[in-house]
Length: 93
Figure 1 (tube, rainbow, N blue to C red):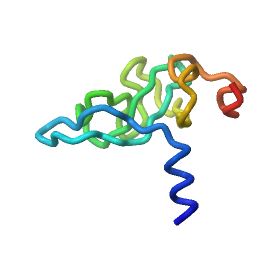
Figure 2: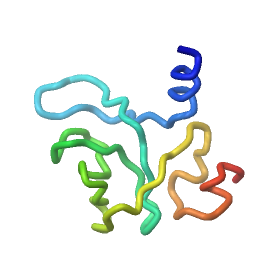
Figure 3: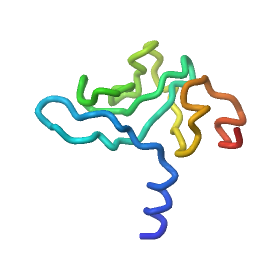
Figure 4: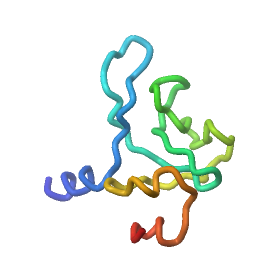
């Protein structure tokens, strides 16, 4: 259980709202598009979250790139809005 707690604490969680009758917070994992820098959660249906950035195949809604995602670590506010660098991937920025 300690490993699960650490994993969840290291993740940046989506604060968007679930759409389609689910008036609850999303709390999905956030991803960043390495092609355009857009950040959002991944959902298996379109328009499932107010801050959805990727579909189930990791297609970016902002630029259309597929498979260009990286996880967003918690506590890295500066890196959430910019494209990826080696330092950001290593979480050393």
